[in-house]
Structures are given as structure tokens and as C-alpha cells.
Image (tube, rainbow, N blue to C red):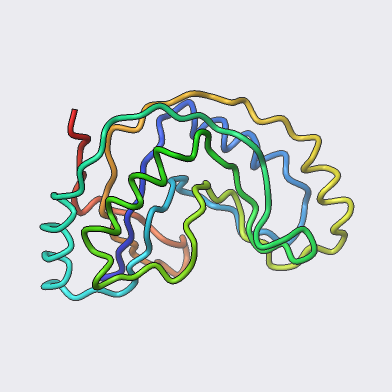
Length: 177
């Protein structure tokens, strides 16, 4: 099974992300359908390994924290846009939670690149006019909605050719407080 670890977002935040997504310029974008903040992607995992991950993640302690949406941006750079995202602020709570997850399962699933907390809005296949795309993006205002993070989930990604991925919670892990 294909697994990843993520923080789910409340309804008003999901609505705001959909609003922002609808304002993006018409380009060859693959729009995200299920918004979440990915803490760690595990990939294909056997049933035995999934049980080990679940047991280890139960040890990942963290305290509930407040966050809000922040800026709109792109990865890896404005010259080579591949991902359009919305950031979160402050990043510290997500960085601490990521570190806690990594402390539990990092021996089997090491971090292959730096973690940068963000919510993916779209993946860019091809941007015909980068300057125009960036100009429109810079005019989009993000409502800095505040939300509470009191849990994270181990999720299964089920790939469906016609619909794209469908996500299913394998287990939800709550904050210590």
C-alpha cells in the first residue's frame, strides 16, 4: 500500500484554498483535489511495515498548536515552477511535529530532502508565460485563516486512473494535551 503522513485541514481553510486555486491563471496545471499538509511520504509499504509505522507513530508526542495560512509561492523557483503552494505560519509547530515523526520512523524512512511546511495547490506541467503567471499570483490575496492542529494521520493513497488519488485514513494520532 502507498502511504504518507499528513495534517488534515478544517473546512474554512479548505474553502479558502479552493478559492485561491480558482484564481490561478489558466495554464497546464494539475490541481490538487484533496488539500492537506504532508509531513512525510513513505511510498509503497508492506502490511507488516505499515503495522510497524503505526506502532511507532503512536509514540510521536506533540502539543496542539495554532497555525494560519500565509503566503502563496512556488517550488523549486520562479524560473522553474513545478509546484504552486500556500505556506503556513508559524512554521515551528509543523517543524516540531515533523521532527517527532522523523524521530519515530526516520531509521526506516530517512528524510531525503529538507522539510518545508506547505499545502500544495497545483503541480505545473508547463507554464507558457511565467511572467504573467507570477504577476497574477502576486495579486492573489491569501486570507490568513487561523486553525488548530491537534492531530495528524497515516494515510493510504489509492491511485485511480480516472479520478486521481483517493485518500483513506489508516490511523489518526492525537496531540498529547
